[in-house]
Length: 238
Image (cartoon, rainbow, N blue to C red):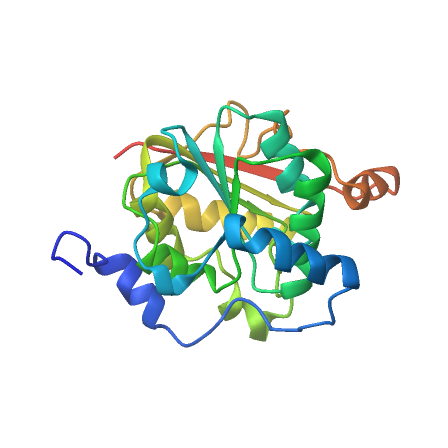
């Protein structure tokens, strides 16, 4: 790797930290998920071992790039890629069944502008994503680690925010959503203290759910029960 390609300091420091923001609970894949992995991973899958990627080469075109961290089972990510075919989408998820389910749904909807990693997002940002290359980074419903002794595991903290900033283009957006009010407040506190970002909210700290983020069944049920969801969108300004 050349000097130009080496990770710069903030993301390198983040990669070396030992506390992870997730627990690897690897369930068994269904037959459909396994089949999707076998058939579609060769064309839609990316690996950490590939190192720094050329986005135009990976997608076969130049286009705005959206990256989602922790896409779960991938339903909303696939729907976003389907709704915005003019953009390229990258998803990162550690859990194999989620990756398989995402590939199945991408097949069902005929989505081709999507690539997936099954790996720790911290290491993917550090080693694989070019600096200043992303138009939007999405972090939807990350584990809130609601017990105080677990707050150190929350992904939204100084080092991670610095790594996201490093990968966003100038003017690029960092969009977060959570259904835990305390975590939403924590996100605001961390983001407002971080260098290089401005909050896009015009009133208060939060924004209405943007049209590009699909409403999940879980979220719709929460709304019916009176549960809140908080969206935050910050723009990289320097």
